[in-house]
Length: 114
Length: 109
Image 1 (tube, rainbow over the protein chains, first blue to last red):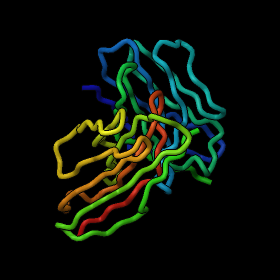
Image 2 (cartoon, helix red, strand yellow):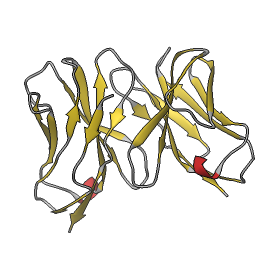
Image 3 (cartoon, rainbow over the protein chains, first blue to last red):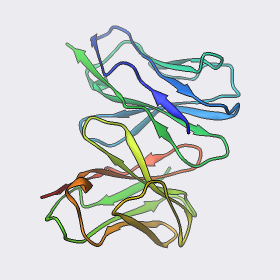
Image 4 (cartoon, each protein chain N blue to C red):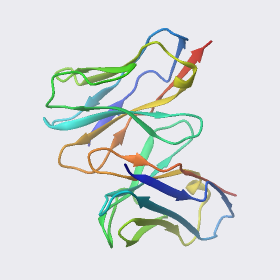
């Protein structure tokens, strides 16, 4: 079974600064997808960014970018120019290419200080 | 894009009572549908998924069941709730990536 590990239960960042969330995963597959989801206090899960394992280029979505290290099985999320609205729980998730199921990490709570 | 409707938003039920949570999807046809449960401060655990009408796969043994009577309708049920069924339940749809509903907070008392 695939496991996703987020080793940082909580992270705090000053507004306008940068914070990096770590995620590692365990898999024997070569083709898969990785995701970062945001869960604000409303509890709805929102997709932040997606990375296909076959792509070497790191995905970027506005202020959100990833550092995908396939050999190390690492998938970190960088939030630049942090805003108060970025405060949420962030989940890393994994899915095999030929499967329907997402495996989630335990999450990292991000607090943004004004 | 897809929209996932999930209700009710909150529910308080006594132990031993039945449960029915409904999820409907707009903006797509023949979606893959999922039920997840999230314990407080934890990640999501996949409970059931469905790739078509009447097709249900269960991921973990439990007191719950799921049904898919229509293409874009997914129902989570229980005949008799247990205290341990309390949690936050999320319905999701998608293949390449999952889109989530707003969730139902279930408290069994």
